[in-house]
Image (tube, rainbow, N blue to C red; front, side):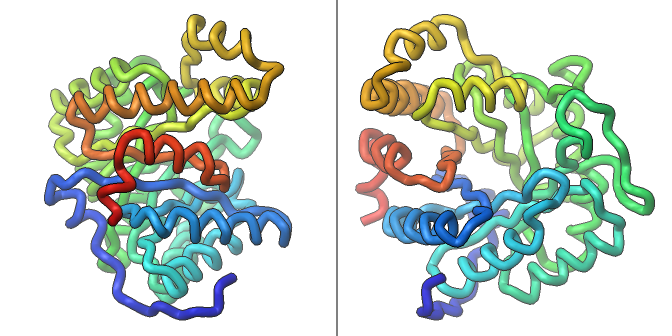
Length: 303
């Protein structure tokens, strides 16, 4: 952890996004080891130089990284110029537990929370189990967080559909309900085709959803890893794209270069379609993300 304390007020993210300026942001996850944490902080410093709109810090499956998430988000708030967005899920938590975590975030200077239902405690594919005394849906968590203080609240969106959703229109209705509960912005799960994002945005608008929906991108750096993530999240990995990566899968440098090329093309198409920004899933490593950022000319905006 860096020793320098910045201690400056963090921007109200909901208000910033509502102004209509494009946001550029990155997602991090709490590492499980000291070495992983050193890597995380190096990535934080690399990304800080790009002056992103915010960085988000994930919440492990079943709340398994709750304490680390709270601590790291607070340290980012205190020791960097970055605006942290801390994840919070309903999994394995009573309302009292959730209130306590929100209080910890507030005490550490974190004023933006990404409110998520979370994956089923038994893992994807298993039935959702509501914690006794807890919440069942993300819109309920949004309402709870909104009632506890002056927080900006974000939510998740799913261009390829939530794994448990009956259809894509149901997803759009759920997203609108989250806005009605107090959400100010959404960040999508990663995806690979711009048309899926555009279709989600347009469906949501038909149901009255007007909040910014920021597309999430993950540059491919490891073929097996991205296939696993796509299967877990429900993201559709297009066959032609899978074929392109399969042809170079034994050449790490070629996979890396193709991953950056594909991410740049998708990002540019999304910006051309009027996306309100881009959110990069970094896996706590900044190299590919910074290359995409540079190729898009976004680093010039950080000067």
